[in-house]
Amino acid sequence: MSDQEDLTEVAPDTSVHRKLFTYLTADAADDYIAIMRLFTGTLLNDLSAAEVAGQLRDRGIVLEPDLAEERCRQLVVWGNLVRSVRETRVPTVAAYHRSRSRFQVSKLGGRLHREAEEILRAVDGVQEVARELLARIVDSLGQILQQAADRHRAPDPEALAGAVTSVFTDHRVFTESVTDFYAYLAGVLTRYDLASEEYAQFKDLLLDYVDLIGADVNRNAPEIRRRLILLLELLDPVLEHLPTAPALENDLVAVERLPGRTRMEWEQLAVWYGAGDVPSGPDQLRAAARQALGQLIINARRILTASGTGLSRRADLLKLASWFHTTDSDTAHRLYDAAFGCYPVRHLLIGPEEADPSAGPGTSWWDSSPVDVPVSLRERGDRTPRGRNSRVPDPGADAEHLLERARRRNEARRAAAAELAAAGTLHRSRLSRAARELLLDKLSPLIAAVSLTDTVAEDRDHDLDLLLRARPAKGETVVINGDDGTLTVHDVVLTALPLQATNWQSGERLPA
Image (cartoon, rainbow, N blue to C red; front, side, top):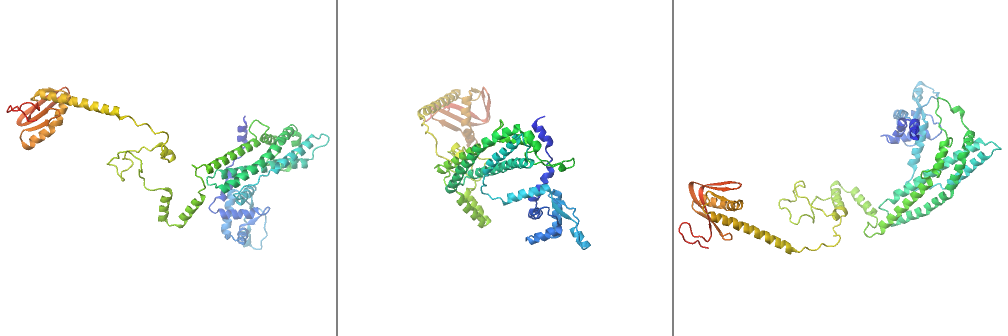
């Protein structure tokens, strides 16, 4: 079975213990905290609800006895208080009914409230590290080794127990204080509003105090590790001579032993000081110091870099917050828009070179064409061009390509026009697709002119040397065949001739 499985088996059910924290965040948290202060103020304080209400009134907190009774009963449900069974002598039956419900603090409820009070009284500043406790741990381990190594005299159980408790208590206080110290430094050094004066103060604090902590750890940690390794070899007789409380050890009561009474606790302590393969506590402290120094350098670079934020904007933000606090709602909205640039969304200074005329300020983004935003503007908010300017391409090749394409298109249209002119009367002719497309382009205005005037209509194209003539003729049909279909035109006669050809009626040459 693994160590994790062992821990899982012996781990207590914490669902009941979690209820102990409820009174700190309940709706009437102030009342509950005031009541718990009464019960934890003295040793085994036994109070009724009426006495709770009276003592709170003396402290300036008005709480009716019935409401105090309700609050105490709720604390009993959560496990912070327990009912008292102490007999009371009262002069009347009414006084008996008022005092029969008495309460006192539970073991875990009192411990939790003492921890909560310590946190509530704590300040946001830095806590001093108990560096001197490392030397005390060295001395206490020396006393334990001296008694364990003396084979001519039995160890003094009381002195031995005091030294063992002192080792673990001093270690716990030291680790908690150094953890709080580095947590405070991490919270301060990650602030981006750290100004030059604050930065200088925290720099001195970090460099000086971390150096003191590191010196004490480097001096005492190796000696503590050496003595712990020696003590592990003599630990069995030490544990045997530690005093016990046999009256507390039975099947009905679970006894919570003081630290240092098992081999596992000593082995874990030795591992913390470097007796194992995992990173030791001193190594973690040195890593935390390196991380704090690295963050200090990052802040210095941010303050000194010209392209960075430079000075702190904390004062400006506080002034802006005061404006928000004193202004009305409409002005606050306008102030927010002006301070943070939250205006209606528009494409400003970027977009396509030729804007879509159908897209205006009222066009939804869902319907308008997307705008390509440069990477520098999208990621860094900077429109400054990066790198070298690209070379201007030579337009000569493009111009030649366009001219060649236009020439080929013109030649194709001339060939189609020549095909139409060669056909003459277009009825029952067979045309290529290009010739038919050219005919369709010119046929619409001819048919429209014939329908309106009921006379002969002509289309003269001097570039293509082509004359198209449409003569109205009721009942006539012009059928033009092609590779991809047949074109049929009703009530008209179509004729195509070269523009310089003789007139098909009079034989005269057509004017140029």
